[in-house]
Amino acid sequence: MDPRAADKATLVFDGDCSFCRLWIERWKAITEERIRYVPYQEAAEEFPQIPREDFKRSVQLIHTDGKVSSAARAVFDSLAVVPGFGWMLWVYLHLPGVAPASELFYRFVARNRNPLYRLTRLFWGKHFERPSFSLGAWLFMRLLGIAYFFAFLSLATQILGLIGQNGILPATDFLKMIETRVGEERYWFFPTLAWLNSSDTALRAISVGGTFTSVLLILDIAPLPVASVLWMLYLSLVTVGQDFLAFQWDNLLLESGFLGILLAPLHFWPRASAKAPPPRFTRWLLWFLLFRLMFSSGVVKLTSGDPAWRNFTALDYHYYTQPLPTVLAWYFHLAPKWFQYASVGFMFFVELGVPFLIFAPRLWRFVGGGFLILLQLLIALTGNYAFFNLLAVALCILLFDDAFLEGFFPRRLAERLRAPVSAVRRFSLRRWVSLPFAVVILAAGLLQVAGLLDVQWLPSSAFQLASDLEPLRVSNGYGLFAVMTTSRSEIFIQGSNDGETWLDYEFKCKPGNLRRAPRWVEPFQPRLDWQMWFAALGNYQSSPWFSHLVLRLLQGSPQVLALLERNPFPNSPPKYVRAIIYDFHFTTWDEHRSQGEWWTRRLMGDYFPAVSLK
Image 1 (tube, rainbow, N blue to C red):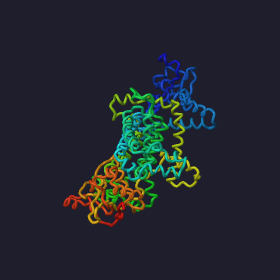
Image 2: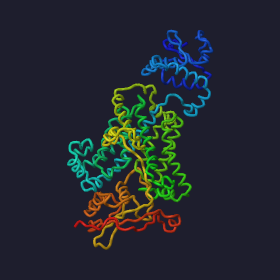
Image 3: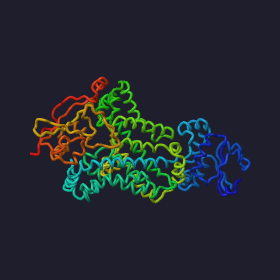
Image 4: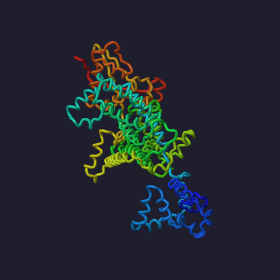
């Protein structure tokens, strides 16, 4: 026997049992060097006082004082030497019924080791050791930084036209209105740095500053303070962005970003090696966020009562009626009916069934992650949804442990980033500080799910927590395309100097020119183009910002005009502006081949009457 092992208890197991060897590898990761592990085939002579039949029947733990415990008691005794696990032995010894139940369960497992081994391999694969998630956490933080980068960069080029002093919905006017109506509580209900300064310079500084700060997160420089700053900057813009920053992926970025703060490691420069794995409770919160995101999207499609979803015909319309389709959407739209029908079935399978695999054993969790990523890739191929798909994939990455992901990393980088699994149990001061935040966010998320499922037995006061957290966007409701739009209307804004000849303003991405193929701009988001899609779903009275847009065009606001592809009045603004509306539809194969057009259109009438500054 190794002299260094004299001060350690020895756990003897059946070395010929595959199930035993699998569990022993997991147990070694938990107890580290505190326990010596030896197969009885090698240790039987070392401990002649123990009959070989006892070794075959159950594990034996030989303590340093010579005392021997076996079966379930040996398991609890071995855990008791690990800091943070001693309570399990106390429960075994002192709570009535626990000891006999544990021994009964152990005997059941011991008698069925072969079938349980096959089940273990089916659900966990060949890696049954305690999993670590350092690589997934590292990759998630990099993808979160990339999402922030594109979100801020996209806004930096649009912010003045959207909410600047001469923009469509000036942030300054919005804050003045809030100050008048809300009073001192405005700082909680509308948290934003714009209270300090909402000038064009300040708004641009927040957007540009966020763009450069996100690069630091991508480079893994000071991830904790950088993630905190990015969350605060983006929350500041979302709070004053009004209609233009009210998308679900804006909330998703803020919720993911806040959890990213809890996940971020404590270092300034990128470390030569990881010191600690990501906090387990934060990883579970991110898993729960992914579950809510996907499951909610499936549930709302059913609870809305929309016949297109219930009849599996939604994709007959989706590809051309979605806000900003890509060119591939045109091809998908022309796919056979059976393909569209099957695609709806696949979508429901992924959104309603697969999310439960997020909490399944290892291999099945991987399968679930693969399906979720596949769905996101298909969505990204056919529609421009800003950074939504990137964020969703980032959340999916966290489902895969280091043993799986290390095959996709350079070997040296993987070795540097993987942290000791044993460090999971060590609760630092930072983790104790983070734990209350995690508990509150978990409770709010559970309330979101309860509200989605229309749970009636919870008191209404319980939902106040989610309502109180709403201004911070750290726990949000999700659910995309609850009702499928079955037709596409496009608004054309026109200007004229004589009231007779009207010229079109052209937008950068939304359909207009019939010969222009649908563009692919993801992960950028042309936010005015998106809002034009929403405006076309109703009348201009239901989109008050539209009148502000018309006013800025009459004034010739350069910031607003910069949001457009082409201004037909480059020298001076027109005297009159109006809007008409068309019904749009994808062309067929024959129409596209003969005319070169991607869209067909039919005039429906006026949308906004001709107006002038006078």
